[in-house]
Image 1 (tube, rainbow, N blue to C red):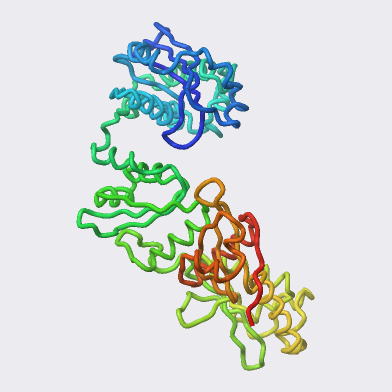
Image 2: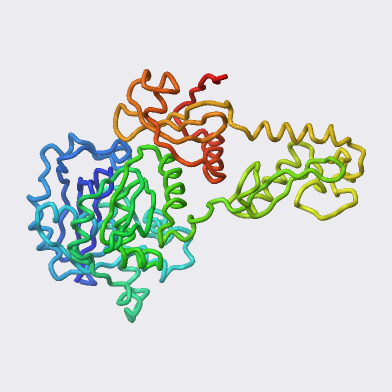
Length: 457
Protein backbone atom coordinates (compact mmCIF):
# COMPACT_ATOMS: atom_id res chain seq x y z
CA UNK A 1 0.00 0.00 0.00
CA UNK A 2 1.07 3.55 -0.74
CA UNK A 3 0.10 6.93 0.67
CA UNK A 4 0.59 9.62 -1.99
CA UNK A 5 0.79 13.01 -0.34
CA UNK A 6 1.52 16.67 -0.76
CA UNK A 7 2.03 19.31 1.93
CA UNK A 8 1.90 23.10 1.80
CA UNK A 9 3.70 25.02 4.54
CA UNK A 10 4.11 28.49 5.99
CA UNK A 11 7.68 28.78 4.71
CA UNK A 12 10.27 30.38 6.94
CA UNK A 13 13.41 29.15 8.65
CA UNK A 14 14.42 25.52 8.46
CA UNK A 15 12.64 23.32 11.01
CA UNK A 16 10.36 26.20 12.05
CA UNK A 17 7.79 25.77 9.26
CA UNK A 18 4.20 24.75 9.93
CA UNK A 19 1.74 22.84 7.73
CA UNK A 20 -1.06 24.90 6.15
CA UNK A 21 -2.61 22.17 3.97
CA UNK A 22 -2.26 18.43 3.51
CA UNK A 23 -3.63 15.93 0.98
CA UNK A 24 -3.11 12.16 1.28
CA UNK A 25 -4.42 9.50 -1.11
CA UNK A 26 -4.14 5.90 0.06
CA UNK A 27 -3.40 3.82 -3.04
CA UNK A 28 -3.20 0.06 -3.42
CA UNK A 29 -1.42 0.15 -6.78
CA UNK A 30 -4.68 0.08 -8.74
CA UNK A 31 -7.15 2.42 -7.05
CA UNK A 32 -7.53 4.99 -4.29
CA UNK A 33 -8.79 3.31 -1.14
CA UNK A 34 -8.94 6.28 1.26
CA UNK A 35 -8.18 9.98 1.25
CA UNK A 36 -7.61 12.98 3.50
CA UNK A 37 -7.64 16.59 2.31
CA UNK A 38 -7.59 19.41 4.84
CA UNK A 39 -6.41 22.91 5.56
CA UNK A 40 -4.46 23.17 8.84
CA UNK A 41 -4.08 26.11 11.18
CA UNK A 42 -0.28 26.29 11.67
CA UNK A 43 -0.51 28.73 14.59
CA UNK A 44 2.33 30.74 13.06
CA UNK A 45 2.53 33.38 10.30
CA UNK A 46 2.67 32.51 6.61
CA UNK A 47 5.53 34.02 4.62
CA UNK A 48 4.28 36.59 2.06
CA UNK A 49 5.88 34.81 -0.90
CA UNK A 50 4.13 31.57 0.14
CA UNK A 51 0.75 33.34 0.30
CA UNK A 52 1.34 34.63 -3.22
CA UNK A 53 2.43 31.19 -4.48
CA UNK A 54 -0.34 29.08 -2.94
CA UNK A 55 -3.17 31.56 -2.43
CA UNK A 56 -3.48 30.30 1.15
CA UNK A 57 -3.73 33.18 3.62
CA UNK A 58 -4.18 33.52 7.37
CA UNK A 59 -7.95 34.19 7.29
CA UNK A 60 -8.57 30.93 5.42
CA UNK A 61 -6.98 29.02 8.30
CA UNK A 62 -8.66 30.65 11.30
CA UNK A 63 -11.27 27.89 11.65
CA UNK A 64 -9.13 25.06 10.22
CA UNK A 65 -8.13 22.20 12.54
CA UNK A 66 -4.73 22.38 14.19
CA UNK A 67 -2.23 19.63 13.44
CA UNK A 68 -2.79 17.72 16.69
CA UNK A 69 -6.50 17.50 15.83
CA UNK A 70 -5.87 15.50 12.64
CA UNK A 71 -2.62 13.78 13.65
CA UNK A 72 -4.39 10.52 14.54
CA UNK A 73 -6.12 10.47 11.15
CA UNK A 74 -2.76 10.94 9.39
CA UNK A 75 -1.28 8.04 11.34
CA UNK A 76 -4.24 5.81 10.42
CA UNK A 77 -4.31 6.62 6.69
CA UNK A 78 -0.55 6.10 6.33
CA UNK A 79 -0.32 3.00 8.57
CA UNK A 80 1.55 0.15 6.79
CA UNK A 81 1.95 2.42 3.74
CA UNK A 82 4.98 3.67 1.83
CA UNK A 83 4.79 7.46 1.59
CA UNK A 84 5.04 8.75 -1.99
CA UNK A 85 5.75 12.42 -2.71
CA UNK A 86 7.42 14.66 -5.25
CA UNK A 87 10.58 15.66 -3.34
CA UNK A 88 9.81 13.24 -0.52
CA UNK A 89 12.66 14.52 1.67
CA UNK A 90 10.75 17.75 2.21
CA UNK A 91 7.28 16.29 2.88
CA UNK A 92 8.61 13.57 5.20
CA UNK A 93 10.75 16.04 7.13
CA UNK A 94 7.81 18.42 7.64
CA UNK A 95 5.56 15.59 8.84
CA UNK A 96 8.23 14.35 11.24
CA UNK A 97 8.75 17.88 12.56
CA UNK A 98 5.05 18.30 13.32
CA UNK A 99 4.85 14.91 15.04
CA UNK A 100 8.06 15.61 16.98
CA UNK A 101 6.42 18.76 18.37
CA UNK A 102 3.70 16.48 19.72
CA UNK A 103 6.27 14.11 21.24
CA UNK A 104 5.41 11.32 18.77
CA UNK A 105 8.00 9.27 16.88
CA UNK A 106 6.57 9.12 13.35
CA UNK A 107 8.43 7.13 10.71
CA UNK A 108 7.45 5.54 7.42
CA UNK A 109 9.23 4.20 4.38
CA UNK A 110 9.12 6.59 1.44
CA UNK A 111 9.51 6.91 -2.32
CA UNK A 112 10.41 10.10 -4.17
CA UNK A 113 8.81 10.58 -7.60
CA UNK A 114 11.58 13.03 -8.52
CA UNK A 115 14.23 10.31 -8.13
CA UNK A 116 12.07 7.70 -9.85
CA UNK A 117 11.35 10.05 -12.77
CA UNK A 118 15.05 10.78 -13.21
CA UNK A 119 15.73 7.05 -13.46
CA UNK A 120 12.76 6.08 -15.64
CA UNK A 121 12.42 9.23 -17.77
CA UNK A 122 16.05 10.46 -17.98
CA UNK A 123 15.37 12.30 -21.26
CA UNK A 124 13.07 14.85 -19.60
CA UNK A 125 14.33 18.45 -19.56
CA UNK A 126 12.87 19.24 -16.12
CA UNK A 127 11.71 17.18 -13.15
CA UNK A 128 9.64 19.90 -11.49
CA UNK A 129 6.12 18.58 -10.99
CA UNK A 130 4.34 21.11 -13.25
CA UNK A 131 6.75 20.78 -16.18
CA UNK A 132 7.03 17.01 -15.86
CA UNK A 133 3.22 16.62 -15.74
CA UNK A 134 2.81 18.69 -18.91
CA UNK A 135 5.56 16.76 -20.70
CA UNK A 136 3.96 13.39 -19.81
CA UNK A 137 0.38 14.51 -20.54
CA UNK A 138 -0.75 14.42 -16.91
CA UNK A 139 -3.63 16.81 -16.15
CA UNK A 140 -2.82 19.16 -13.27
CA UNK A 141 -5.02 21.81 -11.66
CA UNK A 142 -4.77 23.87 -8.48
CA UNK A 143 -0.98 24.01 -8.81
CA UNK A 144 0.78 24.65 -5.48
CA UNK A 145 -2.28 23.47 -3.55
CA UNK A 146 -2.04 20.17 -1.70
CA UNK A 147 -4.94 18.41 -3.41
CA UNK A 148 -3.98 19.42 -6.96
CA UNK A 149 -0.32 18.51 -6.52
CA UNK A 150 -1.10 15.25 -4.71
CA UNK A 151 -3.46 14.11 -7.49
CA UNK A 152 -0.83 14.98 -10.13
CA UNK A 153 1.78 13.04 -8.11
CA UNK A 154 -0.61 10.08 -7.92
CA UNK A 155 -1.06 10.06 -11.74
CA UNK A 156 2.71 10.36 -12.18
CA UNK A 157 3.31 7.50 -9.75
CA UNK A 158 0.89 5.29 -11.70
CA UNK A 159 2.90 5.96 -14.87
CA UNK A 160 6.13 5.16 -13.05
CA UNK A 161 4.72 1.88 -11.73
CA UNK A 162 3.73 0.88 -15.27
CA UNK A 163 7.12 1.90 -16.65
CA UNK A 164 8.98 -0.10 -13.98
CA UNK A 165 7.01 -3.27 -14.69
CA UNK A 166 9.27 -5.62 -12.74
CA UNK A 167 9.64 -3.13 -9.85
CA UNK A 168 13.42 -3.53 -9.71
CA UNK A 169 14.09 0.23 -9.76
CA UNK A 170 11.22 1.04 -7.41
CA UNK A 171 12.50 -1.39 -4.78
CA UNK A 172 15.96 0.17 -4.79
CA UNK A 173 14.50 3.64 -4.14
CA UNK A 174 12.50 2.86 -0.99
CA UNK A 175 13.95 4.76 1.95
CA UNK A 176 13.13 4.74 5.63
CA UNK A 177 12.59 8.18 7.10
CA UNK A 178 12.87 8.01 10.83
CA UNK A 179 13.52 10.59 13.48
CA UNK A 180 15.94 8.09 14.95
CA UNK A 181 18.17 8.00 11.89
CA UNK A 182 20.46 10.22 13.97
CA UNK A 183 21.74 9.27 17.44
CA UNK A 184 19.88 10.90 20.32
CA UNK A 185 23.00 12.93 21.17
CA UNK A 186 22.95 14.50 17.70
CA UNK A 187 19.26 15.36 18.02
CA UNK A 188 19.94 17.08 21.33
CA UNK A 189 22.85 18.94 19.77
CA UNK A 190 20.71 20.12 16.82
CA UNK A 191 18.10 21.45 19.26
CA UNK A 192 20.71 23.86 20.68
CA UNK A 193 21.64 25.37 17.30
CA UNK A 194 20.11 28.49 15.73
CA UNK A 195 18.68 28.81 12.25
CA UNK A 196 20.59 32.09 11.83
CA UNK A 197 23.53 33.08 9.65
CA UNK A 198 27.00 32.73 11.11
CA UNK A 199 30.16 30.69 11.61
CA UNK A 200 30.18 27.31 13.37
CA UNK A 201 32.97 25.34 15.04
CA UNK A 202 33.05 21.54 15.25
CA UNK A 203 35.02 19.79 18.00
CA UNK A 204 35.96 16.14 18.49
CA UNK A 205 35.80 14.12 21.72
CA UNK A 206 39.19 15.52 22.80
CA UNK A 207 37.81 19.08 22.56
CA UNK A 208 40.01 19.72 19.50
CA UNK A 209 38.67 22.10 16.86
CA UNK A 210 38.46 19.97 13.69
CA UNK A 211 36.28 22.03 11.33
CA UNK A 212 35.13 25.63 10.81
CA UNK A 213 32.31 26.49 8.43
CA UNK A 214 29.87 29.28 7.64
CA UNK A 215 26.22 29.07 6.69
CA UNK A 216 23.10 31.16 6.22
CA UNK A 217 21.36 28.58 8.44
CA UNK A 218 23.70 26.97 10.97
CA UNK A 219 21.24 24.29 12.13
CA UNK A 220 20.44 23.21 8.59
CA UNK A 221 24.13 23.00 7.65
CA UNK A 222 25.00 20.82 10.65
CA UNK A 223 22.03 18.56 9.83
CA UNK A 224 23.43 18.24 6.30
CA UNK A 225 26.82 17.23 7.69
CA UNK A 226 25.13 14.59 9.85
CA UNK A 227 22.92 13.09 7.13
CA UNK A 228 24.90 13.51 3.89
CA UNK A 229 26.77 10.51 2.53
CA UNK A 230 29.58 12.39 0.78
CA UNK A 231 33.15 11.82 1.96
CA UNK A 232 33.59 15.22 3.59
CA UNK A 233 30.38 14.93 5.66
CA UNK A 234 31.24 11.39 6.72
CA UNK A 235 34.59 12.60 8.09
CA UNK A 236 32.95 15.49 9.92
CA UNK A 237 30.24 13.22 11.35
CA UNK A 238 32.82 10.73 12.64
CA UNK A 239 34.60 13.49 14.58
CA UNK A 240 31.67 15.65 15.73
CA UNK A 241 30.87 15.67 19.43
CA UNK A 242 30.32 19.40 20.07
CA UNK A 243 29.34 22.45 18.01
CA UNK A 244 29.69 26.10 18.98
CA UNK A 245 28.74 29.07 16.83
CA UNK A 246 28.84 32.81 16.40
CA UNK A 247 25.99 34.65 14.70
CA UNK A 248 27.17 37.29 12.22
CA UNK A 249 23.99 38.68 10.63
CA UNK A 250 26.02 39.70 7.61
CA UNK A 251 26.83 36.93 5.13
CA UNK A 252 29.96 38.81 4.16
CA UNK A 253 31.31 38.96 7.71
CA UNK A 254 30.69 35.21 7.93
CA UNK A 255 32.84 34.73 4.80
CA UNK A 256 35.66 36.92 6.13
CA UNK A 257 35.52 35.33 9.57
CA UNK A 258 35.51 31.78 8.18
CA UNK A 259 38.59 32.18 5.99
CA UNK A 260 40.47 34.20 8.62
CA UNK A 261 39.89 31.73 11.44
CA UNK A 262 40.65 28.68 9.30
CA UNK A 263 44.06 30.16 8.50
CA UNK A 264 44.67 30.89 12.20
CA UNK A 265 43.46 27.58 13.63
CA UNK A 266 44.33 25.18 10.78
CA UNK A 267 41.50 22.69 11.61
CA UNK A 268 42.19 19.12 10.56
CA UNK A 269 39.21 18.80 8.17
CA UNK A 270 39.41 22.24 6.48
CA UNK A 271 41.79 21.13 3.73
CA UNK A 272 40.79 23.60 1.01
CA UNK A 273 40.83 26.86 2.98
CA UNK A 274 43.91 26.20 5.17
CA UNK A 275 46.09 27.96 2.69
CA UNK A 276 44.36 30.29 0.22
CA UNK A 277 40.88 30.70 -1.18
CA UNK A 278 42.47 32.57 -4.08
CA UNK A 279 45.78 30.83 -4.96
CA UNK A 280 46.44 32.62 -8.28
CA UNK A 281 47.49 36.26 -8.49
CA UNK A 282 48.37 39.01 -10.96
CA UNK A 283 51.23 41.35 -10.05
CA UNK A 284 53.39 43.97 -11.79
CA UNK A 285 56.99 43.57 -12.86
CA UNK A 286 59.02 46.13 -14.82
CA UNK A 287 60.98 44.71 -17.78
CA UNK A 288 64.36 45.87 -19.09
CA UNK A 289 62.74 48.42 -21.42
CA UNK A 290 60.82 50.02 -18.53
CA UNK A 291 57.35 48.64 -19.35
CA UNK A 292 55.27 47.35 -16.46
CA UNK A 293 54.27 43.75 -17.24
CA UNK A 294 51.26 41.91 -15.79
CA UNK A 295 52.55 38.64 -14.33
CA UNK A 296 50.13 35.78 -13.56
CA UNK A 297 51.44 33.19 -11.09
CA UNK A 298 50.72 31.17 -7.98
CA UNK A 299 50.58 33.54 -5.01
CA UNK A 300 53.82 33.97 -3.05
CA UNK A 301 53.86 35.43 0.47
CA UNK A 302 56.63 37.93 -0.37
CA UNK A 303 54.85 39.49 -3.38
CA UNK A 304 52.15 42.16 -3.68
CA UNK A 305 49.29 41.41 -6.09
CA UNK A 306 46.82 43.63 -7.88
CA UNK A 307 44.20 40.89 -7.57
CA UNK A 308 44.04 37.25 -6.58
CA UNK A 309 41.83 34.58 -8.14
CA UNK A 310 40.41 31.14 -7.41
CA UNK A 311 41.97 29.60 -10.52
CA UNK A 312 44.13 30.36 -13.56
CA UNK A 313 41.12 30.43 -15.91
CA UNK A 314 39.39 33.29 -14.10
CA UNK A 315 42.70 35.18 -13.82
CA UNK A 316 43.33 34.81 -17.56
CA UNK A 317 39.82 36.01 -18.37
CA UNK A 318 40.39 39.13 -16.22
CA UNK A 319 43.72 39.76 -17.99
CA UNK A 320 41.99 39.63 -21.39
CA UNK A 321 39.38 42.10 -20.15
CA UNK A 322 42.09 44.51 -18.95
CA UNK A 323 43.95 44.25 -22.26
CA UNK A 324 40.82 45.21 -24.15
CA UNK A 325 39.56 47.89 -21.72
CA UNK A 326 42.87 49.69 -21.05
CA UNK A 327 44.40 49.19 -24.53
CA UNK A 328 47.28 47.08 -23.20
CA UNK A 329 49.71 44.88 -25.09
CA UNK A 330 49.38 41.10 -24.84
CA UNK A 331 53.17 40.72 -25.01
CA UNK A 332 53.43 42.70 -21.77
CA UNK A 333 51.31 40.14 -19.91
CA UNK A 334 51.58 36.49 -18.91
CA UNK A 335 49.26 35.45 -21.74
CA UNK A 336 52.05 35.07 -24.29
CA UNK A 337 55.78 34.40 -24.46
CA UNK A 338 56.01 36.10 -27.84
CA UNK A 339 58.90 38.59 -28.00
CA UNK A 340 57.93 40.00 -31.41
CA UNK A 341 54.91 42.20 -32.06
CA UNK A 342 51.63 40.91 -30.67
CA UNK A 343 48.61 39.74 -32.65
CA UNK A 344 46.60 42.79 -31.61
CA UNK A 345 49.17 45.10 -33.21
CA UNK A 346 48.32 43.79 -36.69
CA UNK A 347 44.62 44.24 -35.87
CA UNK A 348 45.36 47.84 -34.78
CA UNK A 349 44.17 47.04 -31.25
CA UNK A 350 47.63 47.53 -29.69
CA UNK A 351 49.36 50.92 -29.61
CA UNK A 352 52.81 49.37 -30.13
CA UNK A 353 54.40 48.67 -26.75
CA UNK A 354 55.60 45.38 -28.27
CA UNK A 355 57.41 47.20 -31.11
CA UNK A 356 58.67 50.14 -29.09
CA UNK A 357 56.36 52.59 -30.82
CA UNK A 358 54.50 53.32 -27.59
CA UNK A 359 56.85 54.90 -25.04
CA UNK A 360 57.12 53.11 -21.67
CA UNK A 361 55.97 56.26 -19.85
CA UNK A 362 52.76 56.43 -21.94
CA UNK A 363 52.14 52.70 -21.53
CA UNK A 364 52.71 52.80 -17.78
CA UNK A 365 50.15 55.60 -17.41
CA UNK A 366 47.52 53.09 -18.56
CA UNK A 367 48.80 50.59 -15.99
CA UNK A 368 48.49 53.34 -13.33
CA UNK A 369 44.87 53.91 -14.40
CA UNK A 370 44.25 50.17 -13.99
CA UNK A 371 45.82 50.22 -10.51
CA UNK A 372 43.71 53.22 -9.47
CA UNK A 373 40.53 51.47 -10.60
CA UNK A 374 41.42 48.48 -8.40
CA UNK A 375 41.95 50.46 -5.20
CA UNK A 376 39.25 50.91 -2.57
CA UNK A 377 36.91 53.88 -3.21
CA UNK A 378 38.37 55.77 -0.19
CA UNK A 379 41.50 55.35 1.97
CA UNK A 380 39.32 55.13 5.10
CA UNK A 381 35.72 53.96 5.13
CA UNK A 382 33.12 51.66 6.68
CA UNK A 383 31.05 49.08 4.82
CA UNK A 384 27.68 48.96 6.56
CA UNK A 385 25.44 45.88 6.46
CA UNK A 386 22.66 44.38 8.57
CA UNK A 387 23.39 43.00 12.03
CA UNK A 388 22.47 39.95 14.06
CA UNK A 389 19.11 41.27 15.22
CA UNK A 390 16.56 43.95 14.43
CA UNK A 391 17.89 47.46 14.98
CA UNK A 392 21.53 46.37 14.84
CA UNK A 393 24.01 47.02 12.01
CA UNK A 394 27.41 45.56 11.19
CA UNK A 395 30.47 47.38 9.88
CA UNK A 396 33.73 46.46 8.18
CA UNK A 397 36.59 48.93 8.72
CA UNK A 398 39.09 49.87 6.02
CA UNK A 399 41.79 52.13 7.47
CA UNK A 400 44.54 53.51 5.21
CA UNK A 401 43.55 51.00 2.48
CA UNK A 402 43.95 48.15 4.99
CA UNK A 403 41.21 45.82 6.28
CA UNK A 404 41.16 46.06 10.08
CA UNK A 405 38.17 43.96 11.13
CA UNK A 406 34.44 44.18 11.82
CA UNK A 407 31.99 45.14 14.53
CA UNK A 408 28.36 45.94 15.39
CA UNK A 409 26.45 49.06 16.46
CA UNK A 410 22.88 50.20 17.05
CA UNK A 411 23.12 54.01 17.10
CA UNK A 412 24.96 56.22 14.62
CA UNK A 413 26.87 58.11 17.33
CA UNK A 414 28.58 54.82 18.21
CA UNK A 415 30.62 55.02 14.97
CA UNK A 416 31.12 58.80 14.66
CA UNK A 417 34.84 58.75 15.48
CA UNK A 418 37.69 56.31 14.88
CA UNK A 419 38.11 55.90 18.65
CA UNK A 420 34.49 54.78 19.01
CA UNK A 421 34.79 52.50 15.97
CA UNK A 422 37.95 50.89 17.41
CA UNK A 423 36.21 50.35 20.76
CA UNK A 424 33.67 48.15 18.95
CA UNK A 425 36.13 46.61 16.50
CA UNK A 426 36.82 42.86 16.38
CA UNK A 427 40.27 42.82 14.79
CA UNK A 428 41.11 40.50 11.90
CA UNK A 429 44.22 40.01 9.77
CA UNK A 430 44.45 41.60 6.35
CA UNK A 431 45.55 39.20 3.60
CA UNK A 432 45.07 38.76 -0.18
CA UNK A 433 42.00 36.56 0.35
CA UNK A 434 40.32 39.24 2.50
CA UNK A 435 41.10 41.91 -0.07
CA UNK A 436 39.68 39.76 -2.88
CA UNK A 437 36.48 39.15 -0.90
CA UNK A 438 36.10 42.86 -0.10
CA UNK A 439 36.66 43.90 -3.72
CA UNK A 440 34.02 41.37 -4.78
CA UNK A 441 31.60 42.81 -2.21
CA UNK A 442 32.23 46.35 -3.48
CA UNK A 443 31.92 45.37 -7.15
CA UNK A 444 28.62 43.57 -6.58
CA UNK A 445 27.39 46.26 -4.15
CA UNK A 446 26.23 43.62 -1.68
CA UNK A 447 26.06 45.98 1.29
CA UNK A 448 23.71 48.52 2.88
CA UNK A 449 25.90 51.63 2.45
CA UNK A 450 29.45 53.04 2.57
CA UNK A 451 30.55 55.71 5.04
CA UNK A 452 33.71 57.64 4.17
CA UNK A 453 35.91 58.41 7.17
CA UNK A 454 38.23 61.43 7.47
CA UNK A 455 41.91 60.89 6.73
CA UNK A 456 44.04 61.46 9.79
CA UNK A 457 47.22 63.41 9.01
